[in-house]
Image 1 (cartoon, rainbow, N blue to C red):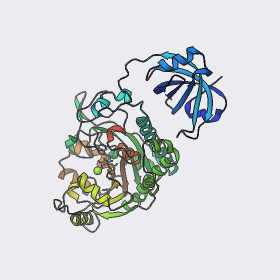
Image 2 (image 1 turned 30 degrees about the vertical axis):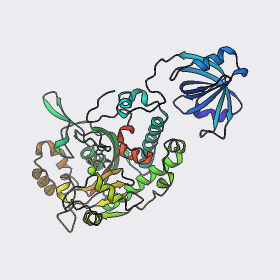
Image 3 (image 1 turned 120 degrees about the vertical axis):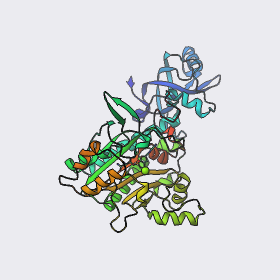
Image 4 (image 1 turned 90 degrees about the vertical axis):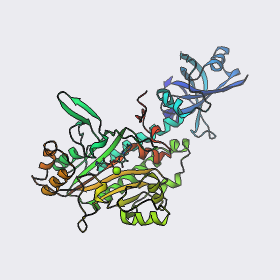
Length: 431
Ligand code: 4AD
Ligand code: MG
């Protein structure tokens, strides 16, 4: 007997196999039972025909409950009608554990209930599809950066510095000192870029943001590349190539999952380079044309503004050169204007919001020192960062892509809470 997984059954058409599974759902009549089975690698229908199996096995099929664990044996059949393409003609059932009163029944449940049961909700077909897409984005990220000569670097999680402003920090004691959970690995990545040229990180970041929106998590994962000898324009090219690469990888490797989620594939197929660019100045004008009279030059864009701008394009759009006052201390000023910086936010189509924030970094020692002082940041804490501008300082740029917003966009999932296994939200630390 071949012991295998659902993902591998295509190799065994016409053969008898054994698979460890959970029962996702079930339909049965007097003569036949249809078992919806899942094993983590996929979902398959098991068919149990009364007069082809012993009475004992047919009874087991009829009485097995949702989320019970079992070993099934059966013959793999090609099945053109099912989206998966195969089904299992079950001839044996060996119960491992009978589950009783599984809380998530096939009926509709409210969001809070599902979130309270996130440890179980992850087993659903939809959540399974989203996690597989998340995994493909992570896999293709490593592939993209490794193929392009980047070295993976792991910045610290416990830090003394605050790249993105001091208002949203998670504070903790570090023995006698104060420490913060990392908001971004950027500053340490800049040091690493001066050692290794092109580096990237992928890790958890933390923002004590009191935002309760479909785009905000308290703990989220960021991909952060940092590149020495690279100006802002060159960085934009890496950003669009990277974003297009992950979309095309998901399209290629997650067809089944995208179909499970009902994603409109034509929207993803058009995500090819180059991406459009609009300056912050023109974005303000565009918003005025669209009737957003509330926005003045110098204001930050909110979700409705980003969505309105994105609606003009069928690809992600870069909004470049934001006002200096809206952005962190480290951004390089525009060469011809001192009121804007060399930065860009990449806004996803279809209302998914900002997925990338990036910029060229200040590489002049005096200017960086001045900016740190203007932002009231303690020089002792940032001394190491300033020193990078003392010993062979070079123009450099980098960016950060928010994984969960990217998963939401590519999967077509409305809220980021479904894009991370165990979301940390304003009012949620459980499960
Ligand atoms: O724009 P942000 O704040 O940029 C930085 O942190 C830079 N230091 C990155 C860099 O240049 N190395 O964050 C980057 C991205 C955003 O575009 C967004 O996708 C995501 O991180 N992000 C969040 N995602 C979910 N929940 C939140 N609260 C997020 N805050 C930012
Ligand atoms: Mg940003």
